[in-house]
Amino acid sequence: MSDIKEILSKYKKIAMIGVSNDPTKASTIVMKYMQKYGFKVFPINPKAKGQKILGEEVFEKITDINDQVDIVDVFRPSKEVVDIANDTIKIGAKVLWLQLGIRNEEARLLVESNNIQYVENKCTKMEYQKHFLKIRQAFPVLQE
Image (cartoon, rainbow, N blue to C red; front, side):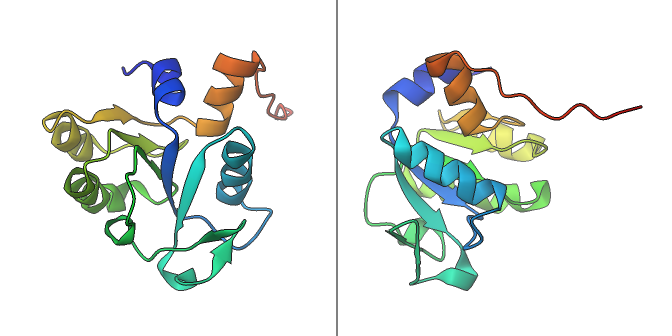
C-alpha cells in the first residue's frame, strides 16, 4: 500500500475524473475541499467539457490537460479504470487513486508496472482529514 500521507504531502495537482456540476455530489464536495487545502484540481467530465466547475475549466479526458498532473482521482465505475490507467501512464502522473468502492486489479498491475502508485477504495478528502487535520470522518451509523 502506498503511503497516503506522503502522496498528499508531495503531490498537489489532481485530475478528478467524474466531477459533476451538482454541488451535492460527493465528487464535487471532494473537489471543493481539496481546492480549499491548496490542491489544483482539474475536473474531468466529457458531458461538461468547456464549462467551469468550482472555477476550473472542465476537460473531456485527462490527456487534454496541458499541465503536469500528479494524482488521477477516479469517481467512475471500476470497469472503466483500465482505460483510465492507460491514460494515467500516458500523461506521466505519479498516482492512480480510486475513490471509495472502486477497485481494479488489472489497472493496479498496469500502473504499478509503470512505477505509478496505486490507491484504491479510499477518499482523498477523508484521507487528508485523517493525516493532516487529525479528523476522522464520521458516517451515519445504520440502525439495525
